[in-house]
Image (cartoon, rainbow, N blue to C red; front, top):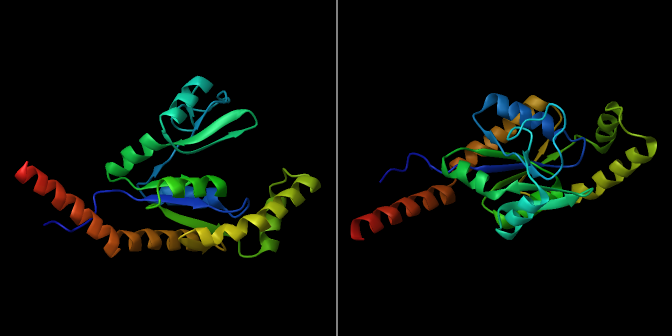
Amino acid sequence: MNINKSNKGLLVVISGPSGAGKGTICKELLNKNNFWLSVSSTTRAPREGEVEGKNYYFSTREQFKQKIDENDFLEYAEVYGNYYGTPKSKVIERLDEGKDVILEIDIQGALKVKEAYPEGIFIFILPPSMEELKNRIIKRGSETQESLMTRFKSAYKEINYVSKYNYAVVNDEVDIAVEKIQSIITAEKCSVERIQKNILSKEGLIHEQLYD
């Protein structure tokens, strides 16, 4: 019996309110680890410089709807007339290969992923304070006063979803937040429940091969 490690990768879902720093944290995680970043599918046209399979998987509405019918999305939504979704088959394929998969997604999408794949690790990124969150959004320089207030009110509501997640990490300093997330991933790989599932699946496979 080999119990050194689980061959199956972890699905790590990172989300939180706008301005919490999800994107920056994910970039640092990818720089420091051999993670696979889940790429979304979309029906919108590619923008200049976007690469198929790197920025998005581009498809027609007919192709996208066919994948919906085939239940090939962990989650999907229609936004401003275009579909966006997380391809299930590509994520599962990487996980089965033993790759840890990072998925950066909005809160509603994360909750849908949790329904479809509850064994994932769901991490909520929190700002150090609401005042700091407001400052970060202002520093982007891309918001009007009206849109700023809309985002800020939305963030207040979104923070209430933190109880739906497995972990919460305060993004005060990016390096520290990244270290905490890496510690979470290490701890999850050592969890008795995950190791037991791996042993049982392997032993079951061995049993079938011996007695088939």
